Image (cartoon, rainbow, N blue to C red; front, side, top):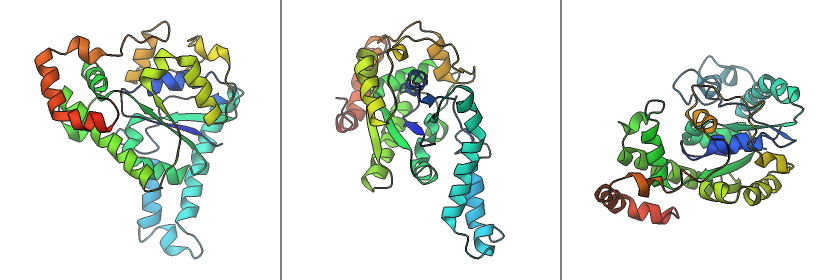
Length: 266
């Protein structure tokens, strides 16, 4: 199915982009799929594939001629079989997949979907942190601890660096990078360029912010954000500057200034 896979730290605008791409004539954009990598801590396809490959009683160890690639191919066929009816019901030929907490497992995703168009969605880590704290009743930081601005920035740096390292090693190739700030400022230009990069058709109706036919489950923090807006707007850009006291801004930028500069946000 040559899926489009959106990769971005949680609260970076991946849901907004998922909704907009789901209006392309070619792309069906279901809600998050945490069951692929186990993003929310439950059993996953990734766990199953690892077990099938590594377990001494598994098929790779016991069936001659069966290798790891065959197991990944079976996993890919499972995802396609499961989600193909969703795309077909909408008259679409391809899928958009996005689960922000998949980001630590991008190597697995690259092997599971070798023909995917991977798109990096990037947002200023300071605003990511503010958005994370704002939705702390719905989101958590896992091993990074309590939901604070500092911990959210720490996760942003680590996950962005992890993606950069995987790309630098050649394990994954990005079809495009989308800055959230550019998406909300110039949505038509960004969507036109992105559709061209992933070989999907752009239509002006993608800009209408029509949510009809888009699944927005209540458990997704990003879906909650999308439902709260009537149009694409830039209201959340610069939230760090507006909402964080100046002394705390200075302390956080002293702590993360080098990272923000390195990641092109300072």
